[in-house]
Image (cartoon, rainbow, N blue to C red; front, top):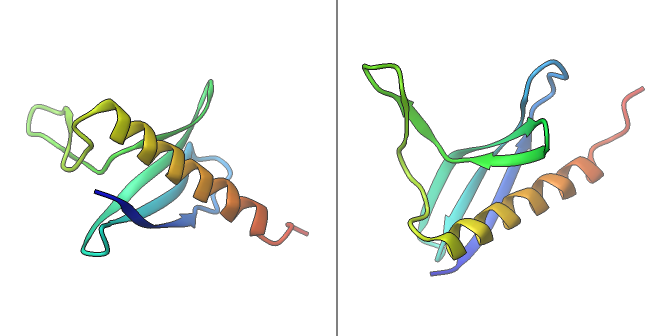
Length: 92
């Protein structure tokens, strides 16, 4: 399996922990949308798309099932996020 594309859409709200939403294409044939980049107390981190269950918990609807794949996905999404931030026009 290979991640063949990562696209990031920056969020413009400064008061939100949500900084970007990403889509990842796998093997040029499968895409996962709504991967989020959040800002936490120790920096940026990636969360997978999730759905709220009737008991109020959130469960991932798609996610890597092993650590190496999760680490690679996190790295690629955060790299694409940093690149998108660097390419963003400066605020006036």
